[in-house]
Length: 354
Image 1: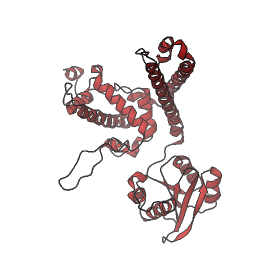
Image 2: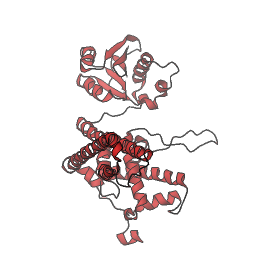
Image 3: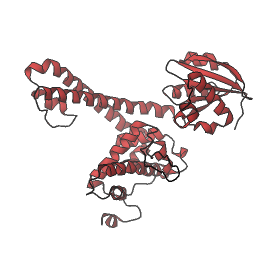
Image 4: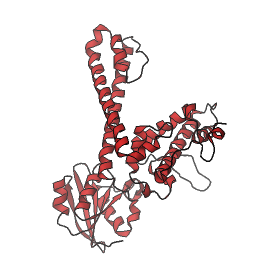
């Protein structure tokens, strides 16, 4: 591991970032702030000799980390959720965080629980997936608003899919309320068309650029969005020595607070990418709900839930999350090996169906 004469801790904020520079002996050489712009970063770090720079994960970490690397510096991106010396500091401030980042990087970079920056192409393609998700969220909010307003007028909105909502509801709008609601329905139709456009682009992306994502769609319940999201978020499957390590990376493993005889069952950590975690949970729900998705995975999940006749919703919910975690492990294993998915590995189709 290369040693540096200067170590910089850079605490990223919205408009400016606070820095603290240490020498090899841990003495503070300088402190201050820079603007979160390319000009600001180049102005401060462009003239420095190569040094070790520790930054936090956040909105600016991706572009700033790449720019610092371009300027010749080694960048360590700290997962501050796992660094309690920063996240739970009793005297937390930007100045204190910058100095703590620098001191931890100087002592041992592994103390920062470093994360790997995603490739530029993967980051760009992932932005398209997240843009689509933002549109879906906006449409859902508008649909719920229209439903609520219609109910307040004594009208019962017809049961229909979100995609066909505007077309089916338009005739149900009372004449006196059209001025208020038709504008919302027009917006919903426009958003729906934009979502379809994104879907076409993303499906083409899978076929033309990400054949490994197409391979993952052999799993029932895993469609273009889930498979592409998995490939783009993970980016490099070799980063995980074991396939099961992907579960904690995606925040699908339970927290633990064991002490003596006390070992309560806690919620999952929800670390990592929230969109991918949601897509995997949706895929798991599909697998459990549809007999056409029968597989070893599905049977394992229902056994964990206590059987398909089980009425315990909390137990079923835990089984869905466990299946999402196991699904991620299977997907990473298929990606690594290039193998085809087998619903019942090690058994013939007849044995699996029995």
